[in-house]
Length: 192
Image 1 (cartoon, one colour):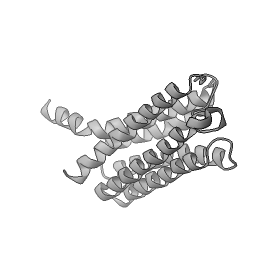
Image 2: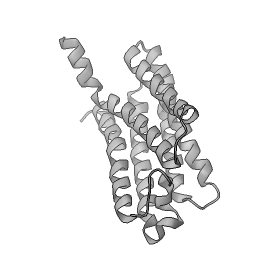
Image 3: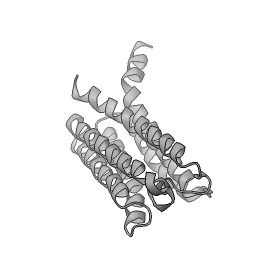
Image 4: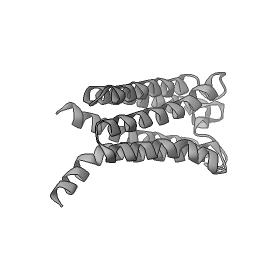
């Protein structure tokens, strides 16, 4: 299997694995209300004895993001995209730190906020690199996704931390799915 395909599949894992984790944590924590709570409540004191499931799950997803970022670096077509891949790696580190410094610990708010900032920065940088390599579709999708993350925070009165986190995760998912499905889109454009 080539590195580019492997990287796309890891991007698909970045989409699927978190939702499996959230579903498992929701099943273990029937008190959770998406319009009241934060996703981090799954890993903090409210979750009690099953908090480790969420925290270990985040660290495992961080490992997937780390491998994904390495694939992005290897398949990058310019230095700006290499930088975007490196930003993804740092985002993975922040995600692992969310699992290590669970809700209720001092640095939790900082590392969870910076995870999303770092992801927006990574996606935006990948978009700039795409434009520099004359990939207008990749650049447009990436810049749009990167811009939608903070705009949603600023323009929408979200009822809870979980809803804004889910919104941002869905944007990350859209970008990763674009990356995964990009060869099919390119083949369809070429065959049309």
